[in-house]
Amino acid sequence: MKIQESAENYLETILMLSEKQPYVRSIDIATELGFSKPSVSVAMKNLRINNLILVNDEGHITLTDEGRRIAETIYERHTALSKWLMDLGVNEQTALDDACRIEHDISAESFAAIKEHIKKYSSEAKK
Image (cartoon, rainbow, N blue to C red):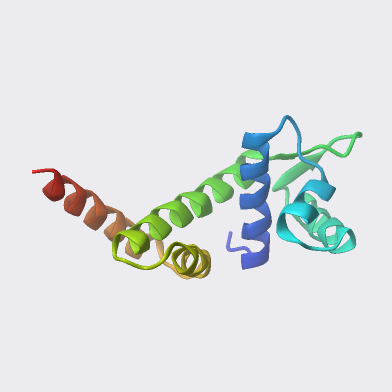
């Protein structure tokens, strides 16, 4: 299932927040992303309808298995691409911003090739 870039960003944010704190609420996401609470509430409703998140009675948000899979894929792309760009000499903020744009559009095939290149380059650099 192909989902919108904004949904991927929300899922990635939920994943990152859930690794730093015991539970995630809409207000946490709004604060992290700098969005309004109503905008986040609409997005959470859409993610819930698409079975990508669960929201309990206390308003705590968790990722479903599919939501976690998508979030982890986006996060892996973001971290690998931003590190790669910084290794190429791109300043950190530009690398992070560019990785955020690239991570949503790059094909699985191209990303796999970049990962292989990074592995090869890193192993050759250690010799």
